[in-house]
Length: 475
Image: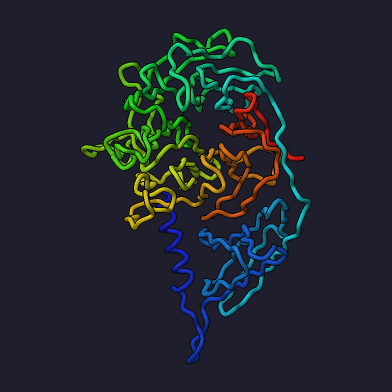
């Protein structure tokens, strides 16, 4: 649907630009006009977040001062949003204006950006002393924090206090250590009514397992251990224990997305990343809304490989090495996939949530570089990362989340991420490309294992140092 809409919008702009003729010369009467959009006040090289919307609804980004010509007569809406450069927010004036284009007219519209106060962040400790915390989440609007511990427990922090009785204890079902263990959880989008949630772990055979559980009827701080329903099992080669992926997450479409690793071994020796008959090295998408023992999940009919012989219908995207953490920003319907690299490159891929069947390249490419030796390779059918960095800046990307909280409004829509080895904190915004990149000078709190989001959409980082959790806050 988004591709169809884009095609319609593109046609509208082509028509706006050409259908009415250009005028000029030989006594021809001009039938179109133009708008010169002037952007002032931003540092050199900064790309603005401004858009021009035509009378028919088609929208065009305007990132620098430019003239937009061959516009059909009518009222055009120019909208400007605040943006970050380094750690300084720039506020536009005006934020919106209507521009009337007449045949033969040439209008100038000015947007002036003014620097506001600089923004600094810090990491405020919320809890310490946890046992290998690897994930944090909460149902929407809930004040509790649910902490996933790698060994097989889910703990609750309630009113700032760690409850003594775990929310869920599946230690007896989990193989833990290294990259294995209880790795994440996801609450049903209708959790308030269903009381259901899903967990991702490596089972006693070392295979990947997704299970559904139910909250106890008489205690909202306790799950019913006997309610377990196995949703999905993925066999792995027992010779390898790494590259298990590790995240389950619901999209805006209500489907459950699952990020799996390539099954381990340097360089993906079995070639799982590019094979479409295996669930390893993939982003999966399944429908669990009516899960039963007999049919634990259904295949969404719009999955790209549904009913294709020899291809696993659960696959939504492929060519991934170890997508330990990905994020779905339901506000902008974007998927951010941070894929851990092999020897040289760490990467972030950003696509629309509806983009199906994409190939992210592994093990043909590592980032944008051909693997293994940088030699030439065919990348024609690949979706290349929007951001990458080499191992001079880190060793293993820790994918994060898009900020949608209310306490730091200047960072709305910014994606945060880190590196396990270096522990730095970085962010960027995505507008048809990576913009507003910022490295935040925060205290190094050790190896950042994961990010988390509470019920109010504020962000946290989880550190392996002292089993600590920190909230990202503005100073």
